[in-house]
Length: 338
Image 1 (cartoon, helix red, strand yellow):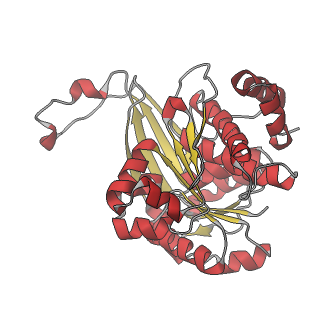
Image 2 (image 1 turned 90 degrees about the vertical axis):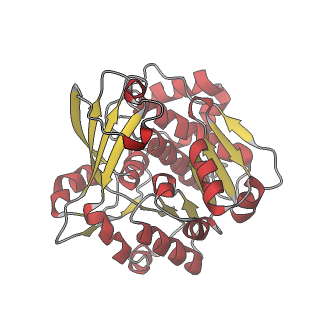
Image 3 (image 1 turned 180 degrees about the vertical axis):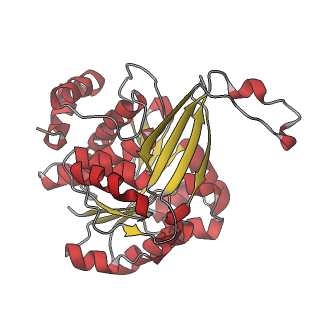
């Protein structure tokens, strides 16, 4: 199954503030905030939404195709992704700009304040999916994750016009894009993935009710933090998949990306093995994919960095069994590394 991941590729600068942001935010004075937080830790890691998803899928043996724009400083990062099973042949290298930068500070309550510098990512709007389709021979799913907004719209239009199933994952760019643009991203998507806050923001900006959104997409998945993920199809009861319990909360950066990686690996791997993971599968198949996503999400939560975790088969099966039962773990086993 050829899964094409379009979206950001970046370097993460992750900092820790040994206090609570809310202690420095004064009620009645939020219209003139001017704050500086002295951090006690800085780590620099590989990141970017599409690249994080690609890493997770690669670790699970899916060979995803990464599509995005980077700078000439991408050479070491490319080698890392290639080593972990990612097809990077269609990544565009800018002659002018550096790879994007994500700067994020996390407090003791896991609240985050972040900034993102696009850099070379702004050139992603110049990438066409047509040469990629010619190289691969076929495209089974296009993932539209946060990226240059013009690139997101272009890739959505191309997928829709070419008849490629696509996943709409606007997440961080919901704040940047307006209602008509978001409606254009969502209409006709096979899957729509957001968290619960983004779900409400999407409704506010598009003017669509939940029922209207479900009428536009095949499947809607909404992550709801520690409560898990809700899976919805029009005319069917919603399914809630709980999280895999964590052993520690270290850093939440990239948790959502890891969930998507596991979800997509399930859609590709379970479908490919004759299991229930494909787009036409029922709710139980999607639930299995979401359970795999929840496993990868908790591995990231327990780690500093979005691409520093590993998946060990026996450990993964044990954690899945503890969270969901032995039968559910066995259902996911075909996707786990040998």
